[in-house]
Structures are given as C-alpha cells and as structure tokens.
Image (cartoon, rainbow, N blue to C red; front, side, top):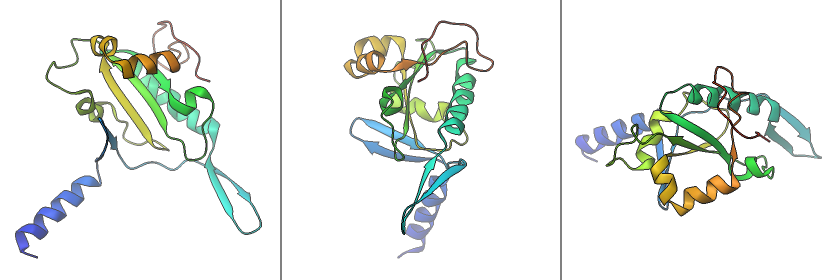
Length: 170
C-alpha cells in the first residue's frame, strides 16, 4: 500500500473515533463513544446477561433532553420507538425526534446533516436522533408517524426547562 493511501486511511479511522456515521436507507445514524451505565447481572447456568439499568438510563435521558429544551431553537422533543411503546429490550436504542423552529434549519441542509449539532458528548446506549424543522415535520409522512406514535418529553419534568406543555416519558 502506498504511503499516501495509508495516511488517508489512518486520518479517516482517527476521525471515526470521534464521530461515526452509518447510512441506513434514507437516514444517517451519527454516533459518538458511549459512557457505560451501571448494569445488572443475571446469571444463568453458564451465561451472564447484562442490561442497562432502566432508572439510570432514564436519568441520563432526562438530563440530555433538558439540555436540548433550553436551546432557543428547540421546539419539542419526542421519545419514539420501543422506549415510547414500552417494548424496549436489552438491545434497544433510544429514538428521539427533535423539532426545531424553521429559522434554525437551513433550507439546503438535510435533517441528517443537523444531527451532529445535537449529539451529546456521551450517552450510555445507542441514540438515534431525527432533527426536523416544524415545516419539514408537517410535510414528512415519516415524521407525522413519529409524532402520532411517539411521546412528547415532559417539559416541566426536564431539569432547567421551561414549563411548555408536554406528554409523559413512560
């Protein structure tokens, strides 16, 4: 392998340690290294099963969403997917829909390109963010479905958030 190719691969791999993008159909999943949560251990005859502590994970989620809700451009945050339905398992990720005001979203910027701006520095499990402006949400069948099936994060329970109306976490 030529030195230029090796340098390019090294530069690309070192950048991926900070922020990694995976393309899943029309969406891009941006991830950063996670911080492990305290976990419970259940022993079976020869197998140990680890799963995140639900209370600790919900605490991390509330603090993260509170940090989003104090941002001027964030209109609302919805918990979606299996955590919103109460069907989450040990392998479930957390899906969040973040609605921002139309002024904050560039007309040329795609929703997936906004994700890095809203990713936390660390989070104890996989986190999928869907960042849309209010007008994009009105036009998107995908987002309208998330709004129907998701749960608005309660603004009043979020630490440091104002008292805008919201729903229940779970």
